[in-house]
Length: 288
Ligand code: PXL
Image 1: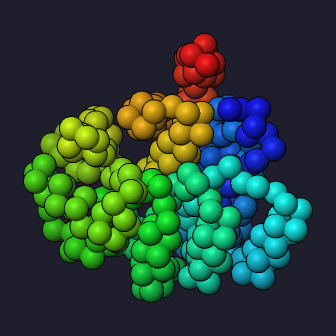
Image 2: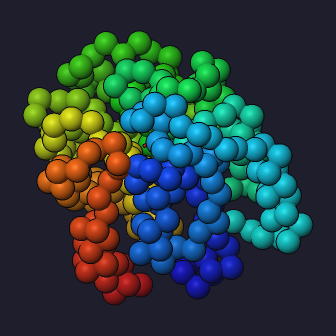
């Protein structure tokens, strides 16, 4: 598996934020630890992440993105699948939708990064949500947070302590938006003293619970989707991949909250990378 992958990089398309360890800043080391070679495509280059520091200096180009994709196609570079996260512009999103379709990019993991705490991220246009709906129609796995799941399903976010029935209904609505074959993982579902991650399997709705850590963590969803994507590329089954992503994210959140440094600077990764190297990867290697 890993040998073949080396001639077929896994696309990771997200922003590169100079300040705020998130997006490509977390995905690249995670994929490297898993031994998954990456085609690293910055969708935007930002001076900082967009939530924590006022308006960042931005650099992006639909033309450069198109030329890059054309160059790969001319070189017959086949991608082994992809993870698409923060894109930030409708034109760029449309170009990535074309790439996903023309390359038959599978497995395609879409983390529809566009909002949190009930609102769209600053700087995103209102039509971003409908463009994102088109992208998720091609996805094998989507990982919206609680806010993004509501935006995609076009359901107002009112329930701050949802029952299992409410979550099940949201899954049904999202399935209509993305297609029956798409596996949905909703992160950050609020609950009493806990945060839930939900997915469905043939037994129905499954929830994984982690303890609630106070405050907002910038980049935790990016860590989650990178872990999930990397584990799936290593042929880990879906349920185990979700559990690795939940546990790995929790390790990052603990280190980040104990570090005593401003959250807006992003995620602390060293404990996560240690856990992956010492525990997760050896068990994957020995089961091959
Ligand atoms: O972690 C999500 C994220 C990704 N990329 C950028 C962001 C954010 C959240 O604020 O600003 C640029």
